[in-house]
Length: 361
Image (cartoon, rainbow, N blue to C red; front, top):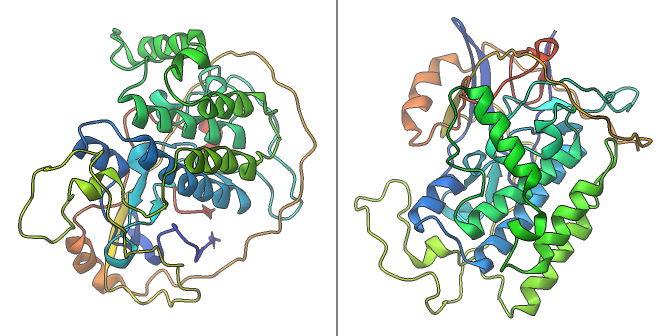
C-alpha cells in the first residue's frame, strides 16, 4: 500500500501525476525555473548580502514547512532550490525529495531514535558536522546545512571545497576534518555577526530539538532592516537580467549587482489549494532511484523530549491516470526537477526505499 502525502503550499511543487514506468518511479510536477546554483553561477559565483538575506527568509520557510509535515530533507543545497516562473518568478521552491526521511511517526508522533554509525547521506559540501560523524540526522542538520548554503553564496566558496583525495571516502574524511577544524568565526569572517549566531544556535540544538525558526528568520530580518534594504524581490540576477525560460535571446550580464535598484511590481503568489491532480498541462518529470549504503563510527549526542505535530493528510492517488500525457509533459521541461542516484548521496541499508515525494511503502 502506498500512502501519498501531497501538499499544496507556497514553494512546494504541485504533484500532477506519479506512477511506475518499467524500472523507473516517475513523478510529474510543476515546471519550474533555474536553480539557485544556476543563478549563483550567472552572478559570477557571488551574491550580495541583500539577495542572500531575501533568499534566507524563504529558504528557512521551506525547510520549516517540510519539518512541520514530519519530514527531513537531508540534501539541502543550492541545486535543490528553484525559482518559479512568470508571476511566481520571485518565489523559491524546494525540490528533490529522494533522500527525504520521516523523522516522526504520523500516528504516535514519536521522534526517530538517536543512532550512530550512519553512512553520510546528502552532499558532503553542505553536510552538518554531526552528519559527517555518522550521527542520525534530525531537524538541526537541515538547518546547519542551510547555513553553509548561505555562506557559500556570500563567500563564493567554502573552505573545504577543492580538496584532493584518492577515493571518495578519503575526500569525505578530508571535508569532515576541514569543516570540523574551521571555527564558525573564521567561516563567517568579514560578514555580519548574525551568521555566526545562526551557526552557534544550530550547533547548540540537541537531537530531538525543534529549531526556533522564528528566531532564525528574525536574526536575518533585523539585519536586513538595519542595512536599509527594501524587500522588493530585486535579486542580483534581476539586475543582471537573467533571461526567463523560453526567451529567444540569452542576454549576457550587463550590470553590477550593486546597481541602482528599481521598484519591483512582482510579488510571489500563494499556492492554490485543492487543485486537481489531473491538471498536467505543464509538468516536469522526476525520475528517482533507490540508494543503499554502509556505516561509520561517531560520538553520541543528547536526547530531548519530542513535541507533537498533527499528522499529515493521507491521499489515495490513481497510479494509472494520466500516463498517456507523461512523455508530452517531460518534453516541456527545460529543467527536469530530478535527481536519480547522485554521486555523493547515499542512504543506509535499512532506509532503502522508493524515493517519492513523501511516499511510504
